[in-house]
Image 1 (cartoon, rainbow, N blue to C red):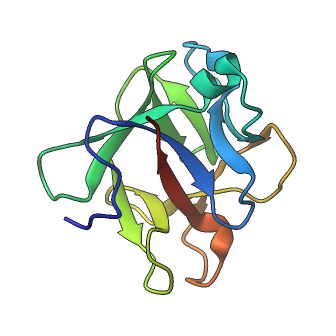
Image 2 (cartoon, helix red, strand yellow):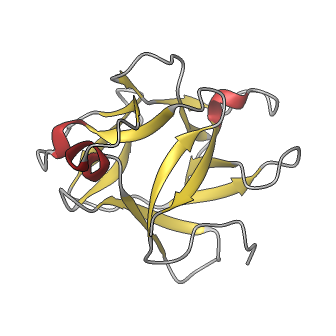
Length: 150
C-alpha cells in the first residue's frame, strides 16, 4: 500500500488539486439523502471543518478500494451517475483511488467498476462536485489530495 494513500479510519479533508483552496464539503453537514457535496474553501470554523471532514475506510478487498463517509452526518459520499453529481447518502459506495502517474499523492476518485470520477469545474464556493466520465489524464480538476487531520 502506498504511504501516500489516506490512512484507514482516520479523518481527512479532501482537497482538489487544480482549485487547491477547494475542499469536498457536505452542505450544512446535513444527513438528508441527496445533500450536495460541493467545493468550499476551508474557513477554519469548527462547523465548516466538520462539513469538510471525511473518513476513508478500506473495503478489505484490493487495498485501493474505499468508502468515504462524512463524520458529522454519518452519510457516505455517493456518486449519482444519473444526475452526474456527488451527494450524501445513507448507503456506502465503493471507490477506487488511482494515484497520478505525474504527481505523487494526487488521486483520481473513481466509482468502482465504472469510468466515472469526482470532478470540480469551478473555484466558486458551493459548486457541486460532478461525476464525469474520466477526462484526459492531464486534467487536474479530477485529482484530489487527502489531507490528514490531527
